Amino acid sequence: MGLIKIFSGSEILATSLKAKLEEKNIVVVVKDNNQANVLPSIQNAKAIELFIQETNFGKANPIIEDFRMSI
Image 1 (cartoon, rainbow, N blue to C red):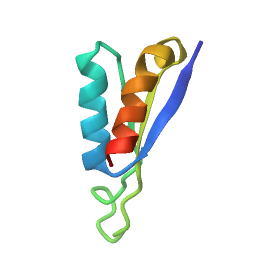
Image 2 (cartoon, one colour; image 1 turned 30 degrees about the vertical axis):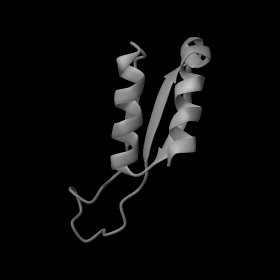
Image 3 (tube, rainbow, N blue to C red; image 1 turned 180 degrees about the vertical axis):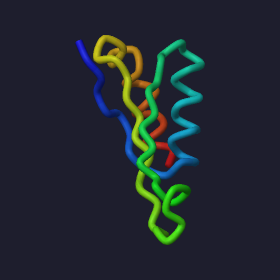
Image 4 (cartoon, rainbow, N blue to C red; image 1 turned 90 degrees about the vertical axis):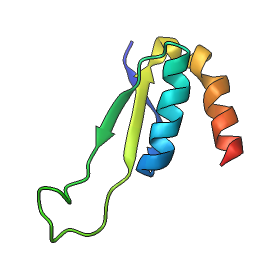
């Protein structure tokens, strides 16, 4: 059992999906590779990635699919 990536995209969309999953008591791990705060000369922000436990995928998949259809 491990983590699986369920989303990669903008911070706004990642935050929205994370909130929907957490409403159903699904723990979400956020990986933010944005180095803009460390190195201000870097202007291109990288995508935010969301991960969940594999065991929660069955419960999370309908929420993820509804979210993807709404964007």
